[in-house]
Length: 267
Length: 228
Image 1 (tube, one colour):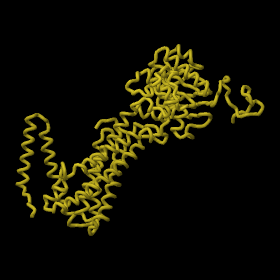
Image 2 (image 1 turned 60 degrees about the horizontal axis):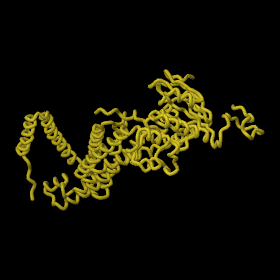
Image 3 (image 1 turned 60 degrees about the vertical axis):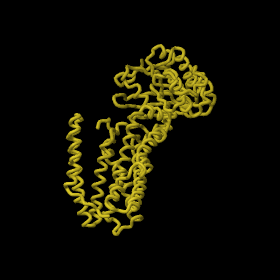
Image 4 (image 1 turned 30 degrees about the vertical axis):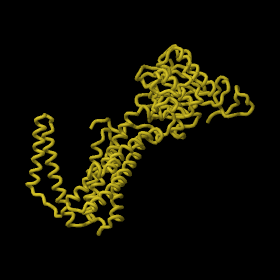
């Protein structure tokens, strides 16, 4: 089985579909026509650029370049986590909390897999390191963003309940415990659902890609299982860390609820 | 340095004992607590000085927005504040925050309920004397949704007293109660003051009530406390 190479003409044909959709949404006055075209253009340009970057990276295998790429991906993911929260932590916490949790969790899980499971030569071989890290960050980002958004939103909504609990002598940990558990669950449910549905309802994108690219299906499946486990662990750890540290930061040393540490709900 | 002197009212008067404020003799006093706020200030409120000897009841009033609730929440160390808080000469910071709040019990004006059943909000529902506030004997088994505003307010008082706090900070505890239940709450708090020697700060807009319960009436206006 050989890989069928796509020509620019092939892509242009697919682009016509998007154009048709844009025209239709114009007809329905959805106000999405321009947005759709800009997004399609961004996809094309961004992916082409990253393709060029990866090409250069694969040609010059060096730990420094791989690390730089990883950091850029992390910072972009951190920005996205912050952007997705309605009420975010003020100051450096807003960006730092999610980014740091993702860094610790996604990087260490990726590193562990690269060093122990894959054992490529060298271990930071970008062909493995970059896609793995990308998958990890993309999913961890979802979990952390959902969980932190739930945490700050719930604390805001239940501020009076929290104050009553504190007034009755509960510790901050007791008072916020239920909200904290809820936020952690929200962050972890998507990956649990994805694992449960994988193969039956959805064919995961990465596996599909590998199969399209000509890999034997069982090899692609094994990689997908590896990725799923990594994502589950990475998302879980990052979510727990972000929610635990975030929940603690909502209270001060005297276990007082400090709502002024989160912003007031405008995007 | 506090002066040491024999106490005139207590039985053991022979030995010079640590100085203490002797309130009028109280029946079966188990604990006596003195609550002091020195130069307490928060946002636009204060600085305020307040000393509450055991069993005293101070009624606090003032126009809405004058900061009565802020003051009470600061006393419970629920808000960052300036100044010092002392319970029996022991500063607030020397307690862990939640231990301070167990002792200095604050009753919010709008207490919240988060479990489905009434009884789940109490550590030991069977020991709570619901009859004292004319609540149904089986109210601990009720759904919260079944409770009226007035029932919730009375339950909130019982929930606070179940912690056996040594100081009571009550934010309009009878605001949504009818006359009979208001009297029942007043009697319950009076009993508690007598039995535990607990000082009470009671926010109330009702002047008649203030006359009934207060040893002292203070008015909070423009951030300052003044005698009424």
